[in-house]
Image (cartoon, rainbow, N blue to C red; front, side, top):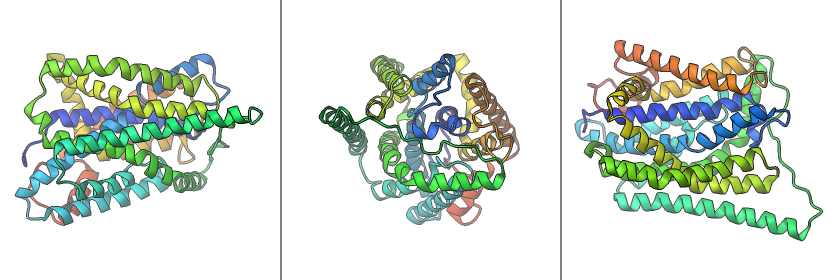
Amino acid sequence: MANLRIRELDALRSFALLGILMVNVWYFADPWALSGSTSPTLEEPDTLVRFLVTLLFEAKFYLLFSFLFGYSFVLQWASAADSPAPVVPRTLRRLGFLAVLGILHGLFLFYGDILLTYAVLGCILLATRAAVPRTALAAGIILTAAFALLFLLATLGMILTSLADPASPEFRAIPGVGTPATTPAAALQDNADTYLRILPSVLFFQGPLALAALYAGLAAGKARLLERGIPGRVLRGTILACLPLGLAGATVQAYLIHYSDGDTSTTLATAISVATSPLLTVSYAAALLLAFRARSGRIILQFLEPAGRMALTNYLAQSVVLSLVFTGYGLRLTDRVPTLLVVLLVVVVFAVLLLLSRWWLSHFPQGPVEWALRRVTYWKEIPQAWDA
């Protein structure tokens, strides 16, 4: 395993980057996005586009990315047998680098950074790395179920409060809505302020859900799921079992967000999303793995794979591009681009990053940020080995 790079793992990671880009772009393009709502001035076609994005992408792809992060941990630990560096110090240096990178990313580029959260969760994963697959999977399921129940109870509490005091109106908080920054200094200030304000919610809400997916990835990695090969009938059965429920839950979630008002609807949408998004995530992964086995699917795998091998570089590059297009760092197009053009921009940016990744890896063994991460992890250059 130390010298093995699983191509399907890289392709899935690249696919996850596309979904993350499709979700993150709205935090740059729409000043209302941070409030969990959309601008009240949107026309019906624009609202429909946002509805479909929420239905198909929101809260699904960071779970896939987290799952793959957990899977990669197992492969990194397996490669320790061929490395002179002890696994714990090596992993802590790696996580420390991710933490610093995440803080810089959050302060300077995108307040919704996930790298710091991964660094914190990676420490938990390191401490519990001895867990057997069944225990790790159970931990992921319990975390997800607990958070879904928590938001359902919160929704029930809101409903009971409104029944007890019908005259009390619901208000939707609108943090972050305002005049877009027009200078690089103002853009930096706005982004840093927002990052520091929402960091606790990212760590304590998104963090446990990402941890659940990390544990699922840990379980799958220890079971060598991808290396052994998942039978086609299992993949098809997974899609048939999970896709209908996942789509149904995502449809209700998207409707509550875009066609219903009030904090109660938003909280209920969150509960439904927590409970059902993993089903859609699993369906996407199973469908893609199944597609890779066809001749046309192998072509898709070849195009996706390079970007997955440079996932960290591409994740940061996405934020650089979006900052230059939408914020005071560059063109200042926040709230000025029609929704369909925003979606088209995502497709174009992702396609360009795929091509650049393919070109880069034809000249260099790994991405630039991956190279820096590797140097910090091992303290010195060592022979190329498997390192996700």
